[in-house]
Image 1 (tube, protein in one colour):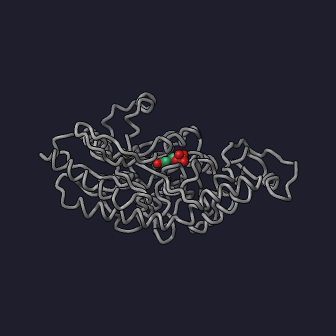
Image 2 (cartoon, helix red, strand yellow):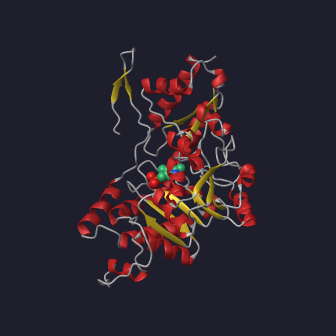
Image 3 (cartoon, helix red, strand yellow):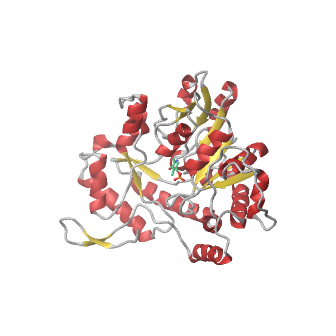
Length: 398
Ligand SMILES: *Cc1c(COP(=O)(O)O)cnc(C)c1O
């Protein structure tokens, strides 16, 4: 993902290319991983334990259980909470496939609820009408880091006797007490995928408050081995273990945890840098008639994992896709979050979607562009993104 000079199409001038994402890897991160390699202990061990403790402290949760992805985290959380075949889990179609996949893993059925057009999160006003006697859980996603209205979601859950597992893959910095996502769900799942707010390459974490649940999660994350089996990963370990449940191979390595611990030390600094970039974007785009800024939550803390710029297509002569092509030709690489799941061939085939079921999700999808947003962007790169976006808007204004 290194930057390079490219020849602008048809202009013949070289331009600095800005990738959609570049992970922030510092010498201290590299040193931490090298130290782990030299220690001779590569898989789940002392660094995972330390990462879990530091993460739980940061979030303000009682427990944190490390796993090897957020997909695994959501699967384990649903499984450990007893969600299974015949159950329905309410979620949003406006997410990455992992969210619905985790529901399918336990044999349950994902039930999509359309989004609130402003936040892009599951519309809490429509939540209750989706509840049936089969509903067991709600799985909200904090899109781009915009915190869901957790008090309202937990209110419905409490009244209707439902579990809440939240997909906080984007929302690390929203989940902490200062972020006031509010009361948390039964389990909250995080991602450390390469593009996420902190990374371990691949990795995930589940936080929860319940001691028994944490114990079950730990057991299931490593082949269903009994609690004491964990001691074989410590200095006092022994060869003996018992398999007490059908578990999974979802444990995180110490190499990944070493990177995670090192990254976690910078989590607030990296968040502040992204906030500063968001402020530059907002300032520059506020007066551009072709653009609509990503909304800010009335309460709670936006984690700003993504900057979802909204195009006012009625004021542009080009589509969103063409807009992205124009930016790419000028060296700016963007993305789209997300292609709604009900449009995907697998979900159409399996659940019979025609494509028009979730109009708000469709409408948002048609006009969003995710701009580069990461702490290692230089001031010049931010300026280049701003100038280029404004230039394309002017050129194609209607
Ligand atoms: C990245 C992502 C996931 C999956 O995370 P992994 O750690 O790659 O499994 C889940 N949900 C959302 C919304 C994501 O963006």
